[in-house]
Length: 345
Image 1 (cartoon, helix red, strand yellow):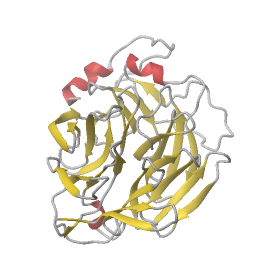
Image 2 (cartoon, helix red, strand yellow):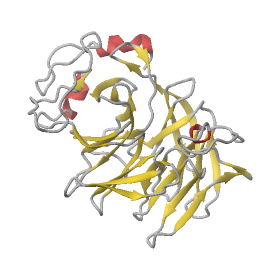
Image 3 (cartoon, rainbow, N blue to C red):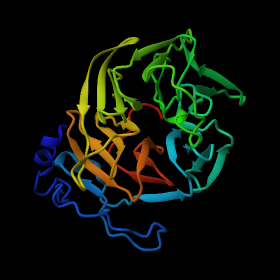
Image 4 (cartoon, rainbow, N blue to C red):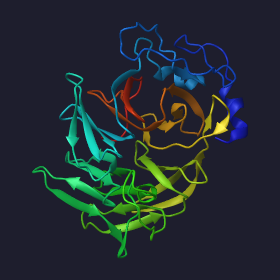
């Protein structure tokens, strides 16, 4: 959505079908601190589930709160849901760890240490975990016996920059982004020179061949497919600071265009999406200030989930895939929503 259109589209006034007032950008006041311990009752609906447009009302559940499950990471990233194990894994990039949250008892433990300064994670259709490692500049797969298979670490004989996020396609292919963030310093990886353009890649599930599907983007970050896999969305955290979308044509991407340009409704300034995921209705849920922004299929920002920290990434999980998990700076959050996530992790 263009900046000049934001206020017009966000100022939809009135009462939604669920009986919640639609909030405009002008009405959105500063974030109000809250007790995340759970000891202080929270009035419903949660005040930080905010509809900017009536289209978001159906996704706000009246009697559910945003919950904080863990705090203490340095930079939380890459949430991925394991449906068989009923657990969520995510990365703490600077601490070089992966953490695991168990749905059964709310316990958080260290899952992998070291973890290659991993960033984005997902699971494939065989239940194997895939991780993007900043520190080792590669995409890996963890096999059933615990061994590691390197999926991608170079292209045309040159080392990748620092693979960031990864998704899988039903045809068995693996798609990932390769921006420079892990080689810019030694905090989230290892400082090194960039030798490849910042690009999006596809790894063939049968042959393992790596192809570049686009470098027509400043700094590709989070990515996700539409529910029918006909579209690929990629968040740009470079100069453009937008989300782009392409039509998926087999192994190729076609007709790339700007999908949306996000604005922080608290102050009207441009903001960028980091991690993104689609729901089954085709909405894009993006980690973007002031927490998570929800973008309708036509590119309009229709809702917000406000958090006290910068949200890097999101994923859908839980037994019904209707629980949104949010990795935000030092913490892990979740909230139930009125739609299921697309994809498998």
